[in-house]
Amino acid sequence: MKFIDKAFIIPCSSSDSKDFFGAWVEYLKPKHHLTETEQKVLAAILRHRDELSKSISDESILEEVCLNKVNRDRIKKTLGMSAPQFNGIMGKLRERKILSQSKITELYRINPNFIPKLDGSGDFKLMLIFKYSDGQVNQETGSGGVQSESDSSGENA
Figure: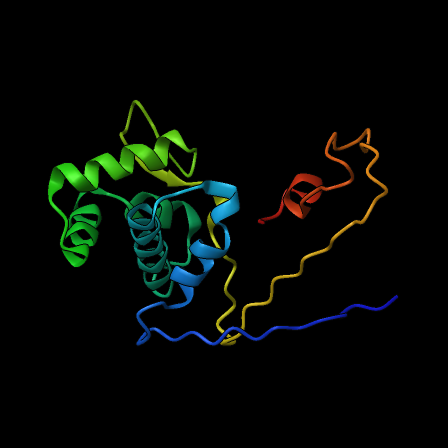
C-alpha cells in the first residue's frame, strides 16, 4: 500500500496575516460555509484555545476556561469587534453547530471536529483519502463512497 501519493506543504506562521488557524478554518469552509468575518472569529477562538492548551492540560478545564466571559471579551477586543457584532457571530457559530452552549451553565464548547490536533512538533499533518467510486451510492455512507475519518472512527476531520 502506498501512503503518500502527493504532498503539499502549506507554510504558515503566527506572524503571517493568515496563520495556521486561519488556513485551517479556510480549508474547512466546505464543511462550515462561514463568511470571511465568521472565519476570522473561529480562527481567533481556535488560536486562543491553542494558547491556553499550552498551560492547561486538562481538557475539561480547558473547555470551561476557553470561552468563558473573560476570554470571549479578550477575543472580541483582539478582533476589534463591537459586542453586538461579536455576539451575532457567536450565534451564527452555534447555528452551524461549530459551537454549542449549555443552557444551564452558559458554557460554550467547540465542536471537536473543528479543533486541529496539534502535537507541538511544528508540523500538522492532515491525510485525505479519496475513495473513488463509479458513482454508485455506498450503502454504509449514503454518499457515493465518500466518508470522512471522523464519521468512521470518531476522530477529527
